[in-house]
Amino acid sequence: MILDGNKPHKQVNIPCAVVTNQLISTQKLLMFCSLGLGLLTTSCGSLPKESAEAQSQRSGGKERGGGATPVDVAIAETNFLRQQPEIIGNTTPFRTVSLRSQSEGRLLALNRDVGDTVSRGQVVGQLDDALLVTALKQAEAELAARQSEVARAVTQVSNAQAEVEKARLEVVQAQADAQRQQRLFKEGAIALQAAEQARTKAQTAAQVLRAATEQVRTEKQVVAAAQGRVFAQQAAVAQTQERRSYARLVSPITGVVIEKVTEPGNLLQPSSEVLKIADFSRVKVVVQVSELDLAKIQVGQSVQVRLDAFPDQTLIGKVTRISPAADATARLIPVEVVIPNSSGKIGSGLLARVNFATQAAQRVIVPQIAINDDKESQVEPEDSSGTVFVVQESANKTKVTARAVTLGKKADSKVEILSGLQAGERYVVRSGKPLKDGDAVRLSILSEKTKSNPSGT
Image (cartoon, rainbow, N blue to C red; front, side, top):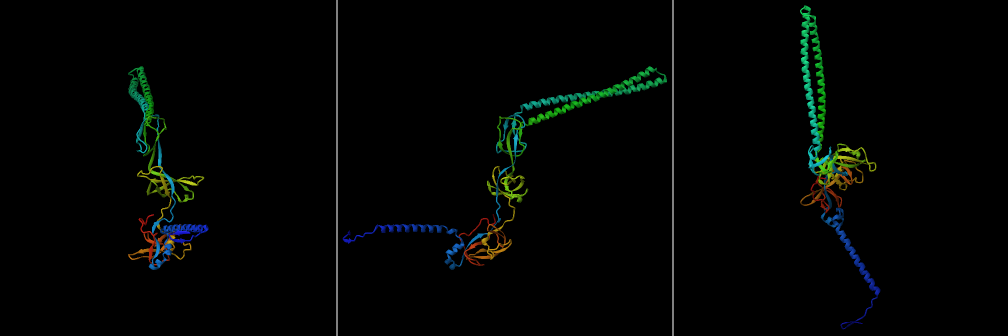
């Protein structure tokens, strides 16, 4: 007996099995309630992603009352039907030249560093040329001696020519005397001995003239030999001067220093590398192309190149070389593309994306589900026709207008519009129920409102 105030109560005995069953039922009820709340939350979270057709099924009562069909609307834009894949490569200089020492000597100065711009013919360093200067002075002194020999030989030639002229005059005089003495002898004015003496003197003068003439020829040969030695020494001087000029390190091209190999103070040998200079007036990109795509590529073809370093720019390059040898394992062929770099902003080692797509005209591209046609199940040829519903908005309501369009190529669930729909116009992609010309519609939450660049890619 349990007492509650002054009223007596009966004692109730509840079996343990009943209490246990009631607790288990209560736990199951709480678990089902939690599961229901989770499903409801998930369902509410997925509402913005439903299509117009799903909205129409869920809110059928409202549609029957308002009469407007929910539709998904998109804005027509131009693009390529198929986006050609981009092949990745790296930028490299158009050419790279190693500046090397052409003579032995200690590097005294190097006035250019990595990143500096150099011009063709510009002096960028200096070697110690003390020994070369001494050798040049010796060669020049030897040349002066050879030139003195030539001068002396020329003087001897002049003297010999004077002797020839003197002997020639004596021959003329002796011959005249001999003729006169011979005439007097015939007249009986002089004895025979005097006439013979005059003739002998004339013959002697002629022999002296021949000897003088031969001496002139000999002296001229001496002059020629001396001049030959002068020419040889002049060549030696020029060679020494050339060797001395090697002490000045001159840039062979216009470009940018990309590597500094040595430092001032080091002893250089002939062919020792000093700097690497790259020509960035143009930039090369070498990409590996599949053998299946090789037939679509030819030398001189224009291609599009995008650099990750400059994402807002699309450069136009040109195919300059297609390697005749393919990789035997991967079946890839190196293709060289050259792009302009007049501003000099493009450096080496940048990631480049090359597109070999032909420069075809862009067209309006829409999903195939936006085309209304009774022949959906058939494979339609190019330049077939269809209907697109274009959205027209006014102050009071939004309706659709059926628009006949000419269809082009199809790919990847998309189709080209050759005519009938312009870029920037809004059209129905899908609707909650079949549409007719002039039907009132209501834009779903998936519809595109505006587009900043409707005609761009």
